Length: 565
Image (cartoon, rainbow, N blue to C red):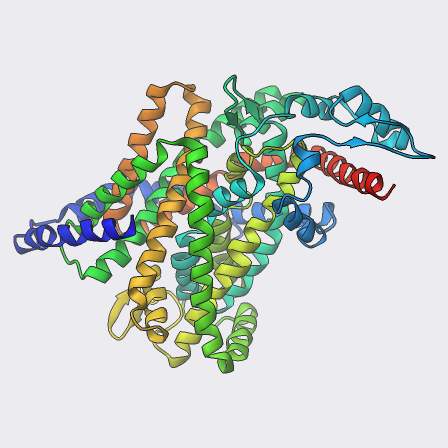
């Protein structure tokens, strides 16, 4: 696929250069950008309204992540290994098939079938009256005994492919260009806290999912907002919040999950082939739209089959390249880390302003990258095959760790080590988050590409492929998120599905043609808009998550006791 794609782009070079020879007064790329700019500015101004000089949505995000971390007893650390074991399938027997627990002398019951609601409820009540099964959990056991379309690993791979993307390459570069090395520190903090938020929202995603007659799973914030809040006696609020989330999620799929990705893929492709045409972005966007359009027809199973192969490959390959650069310059690692910590609290980057300024840059880029709090990943995680909603919640907490703590940090170290040579000045020098390197303006993934090129020969080809794969995998995953929201609003008919997919492909072209600032302002606004309705559900329903976590851990404990007996 990669070879054929590069061949097609190479074939288009003469056409693009021919268009350059007779340029119109304004090229098609700039025409698209000028048309899209007012839309971008409007949504950005509305979503990022400030209280005390700080965007309220970031205050909400940080407060909620901190609260869930404390309430659940630091699940991001406490259950980290349990999450890995769940992904590996260690507890698959109790999750998918139930567990017939046999107890010997002193046991509660002989031959308790965990798949039978009455047996399980009586068994747990006999063990501990405080663990009596309520109606919600009984329904979950009954309804989810065979539900789900993908494995834990496939669900994680699909969700990771939606978060591990050009936010890790272009977003990190943008954060450092704007806020300096200190932004890295706050990105990591946001990633660690986001693990707890991701755990909560993905547990709820499985808990309140719908399963269609054909076995197709429909899940995400739309469902736990409408169904969960109805249980709490707030049916109207739940419906309104669910509709708002669905609208914002569709916007997020068009923006951060789509246009921002094609935008960065276009930047590196244009740099690699030295495309100067005023229509180059448009034609690359058309090519990307055709490719992604073919892939997304298959649905979540097809996406899972693609992402479970592509995501580990590209993530490992990218991490190895980062490690090579970092370890090759091991004498600079302590200097880079020292700079990250010191600049986090005493920033010197031009225009960043203060501690609050660099903190906001770091948190904004990390939240965009890992999407913890936005609720988007719970849509993919909802499709997992399991009877225990908390099992997938634990799996999901690995996502921000992989995305932000590991990959974003490595990208940041590469850029910071590169700039030890003083290639560009930290801070918003041009007003657009652009770094001036050797007199040339670079933005986003272009900055990262320059850092790679300084240490690895011909790395421009490697990074172009990496950025392209990150972009495509993110787009196909986000097409699923947006489509689920679209279905929630307009029904599950094939005609309406086709309308959404056509609109999705149009935004691929818009993202490729417009400039980075307008696209990323719009993308930020759409991703962060999802936080508002999603948090309503999380704060109403987090006690349900605690109950489901205890239920899953108790099942594991009983299995261990049965084996030991």
